[in-house]
Length: 237
Figure 1 (tube, rainbow, N blue to C red):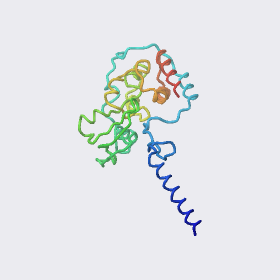
Figure 2: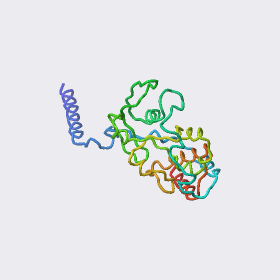
Figure 3: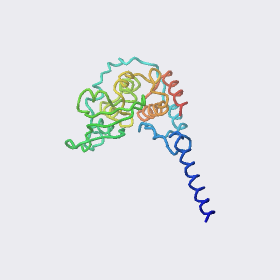
Figure 4: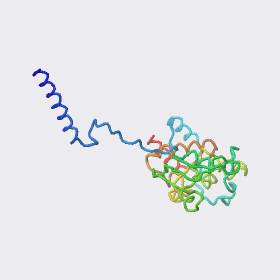
């Protein structure tokens, strides 16, 4: 009987010691089982075959840098507002906002079943979180914009000035060349090429890849400084 009592007392004592030790361990102590929340990333990032992209870069024709005013460029030569290029009833702005959203609220509007009215996005250019409650309100709508990765003016001076109007409209609505981004950042990018503007380092590989793939797909040329900058950004892949 005495032996059983001693054993029970020992078990209780060990339990009390264990509780005392655990009570002063910090919550984030190694082994405490508190995993950090997963980091949010932009859906604009995707797997990259660097060798293939470098091959595409090498295949692009080289032209001398030309000013944007060559052949009287105007935005209207690429068409007016967004179009419904894929025939799903929604224009390209709504398609991009839906595709790139972390969270999104939509409503049916006419033939479009996903008219985007609110949501959250991760700006790929800065990494900032963009949250909006009413994208029909002009200030909020301006705060998130749909960017042409290869700007229309850049396309114009690198080959699009020779295209027919229908091809230019198709380029302006090419989903693979469009991203939902922070409005002020997009304005600062303007129509610069990678020699004049770059996103945050973590997105430079994905950005250069999109730029090169777009120019290769549309048979657009690049200049020497642009080629060097793209090669440098691929170094972050």
